[in-house]
Length: 629
Image (cartoon, rainbow, N blue to C red; front, top):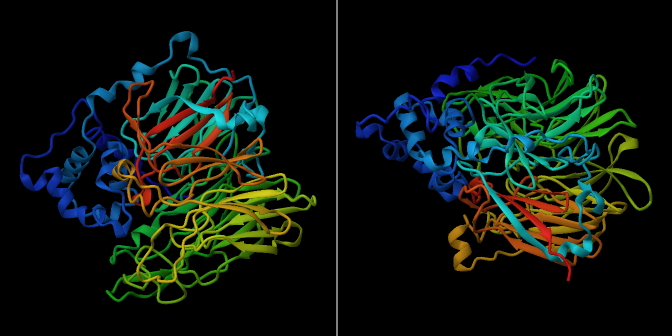
């Protein structure tokens, strides 16, 4: 069962020392040894200024909120790297990196809606209610739902932009109900209810830890209360009232210190299903870390109370295995994090999730796999393992390097990061579609315990390549974005990247069309983007709107293609600065995760994603078809 973590509440007082505008904000010690620049040089620069390590750049760190950075260094994924920094120097580092933007501190108060606009109208049905846009994760909208048609797509034009201070990544898909857009900004630890017409804020909900998932919107079975559900970096799941932002319950679903929630919680018949992932893969870089004990899991929670009803771990508990080359105790098995949003198959009484690699030996049969669980009991009904013996953590390079890198197996990092899609081919047959970081798209038979129907490889695959966040499926076709980085390593001379978008027939796996992308790096874009010549693939989720597939690239471009033919219909470059209607300076960067949705005649695009050394950004953009003649 989840274990207690009092450290989160203990952080509250410490955070007051680093929050901009805090009444008793601490000043960095006068001693030069504790100054922000010197602390950064001593503890941080070696990684964050080495492009090969793909760590966030100092520019990205400067766009991060003090809350988020302090959490990451204190109890989050960089805790091990920061453990030797004295507390006063840690505060000085955070203060120096994030600064104190006095002009931005009051933006929330200035943006508050006047009283007549403050209450959200929750009577209309939600246009965007969940990451998958439905229990099948097909990520498809009709023209009626979006408010514009295929014929209007070439006429889309920017109508407004909204910026968010102290933010370097726009990672969470919004919920849209009527004229209200609910948006989670992870680094600000806040959820915003935004009036689409004016940009004013109906309410703001603040958390005490960085948030992480996309939002899910649903109605409670008793009383009809409309609520929002989301997860944070500490694997706590929150439910708040969508009308008032009042917290209803919060449940800690973490199984380990490294647990977090990445895929979105989804609801079905009075239960909330929560996927659990882990960041222990990063801690393995530290030779003193006893790698590794954490693993992925799925929980079922009571929707009304947040009580955990059952938990299904992806493997047995880790045991001591051997000592590393530097004498550190190693553990295993571990890994198989669940990054994906569950797909709900009500007819068969199952849910489907994908898992990642093992992070330590021995390998298990549930890593790099699609796992079917019983909705009622959590029992594992079947497992399809795509890649065996994938043993990888961040101590590994293309050659085994750090002492925590496993000696056994292969170091591939071929997770299933893209959520399973329950789709139907033109023949009427239902199939399960799963995209893997190997670059392979798999089709499985849900009526034969996940038996393989076909597979097609569309990219080279790598720890940052292949198929990442999400597919979109409709009309017998599936849209598959591929993210192969333009360069990877001199040690992989045979690497031939193929980033782009592919249309694939659901019945046969036949590739119907492909639209590859190439770097576009004139001087003005190269100055704006991080590694423009390498990070230009399609990592983020695709979305289908009236037969048009929209997706973005890691160099900030948005594309619209006809889903049947692949014909290019529209594009827009977000890699620039924007004037915003809320007065917050904003710029675009990498487009990743689930950045694109539509409702009420508007196409919404979020730009900026600083993870893995990609280009930061902090802007929400809205496009509308230009009026006809």
